[in-house]
Length: 103
Ligand SMILES: [Zn+2]
Image (cartoon, rainbow, N blue to C red):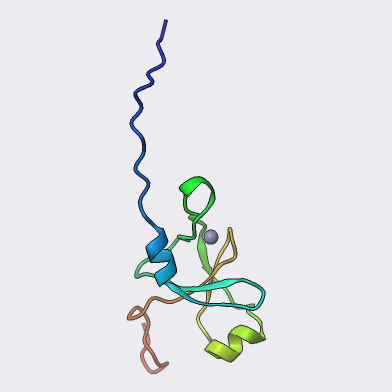
């Protein structure tokens, strides 16, 4: 006896694309994107299917190849999305620029 309501309001999808493009730092030769995190970002904001975002967990990653090392240095702080493998760099202002400051 339950009648299906067909008046479900359309979900207004938040516009993510501008931010995604803005935070792209460079793309590796194998197509892996390297992006800048926004402050306190802990999950991936890459676009996924059907207007959703990836939302994969960003974890510290140490196994980047020579291409990343050449661009960022061998001891670069790199994070990687567990889901889509996009790489992330620390947000500007979130980390000290040199190793002289500690947490
Ligand atoms: Zn992702």
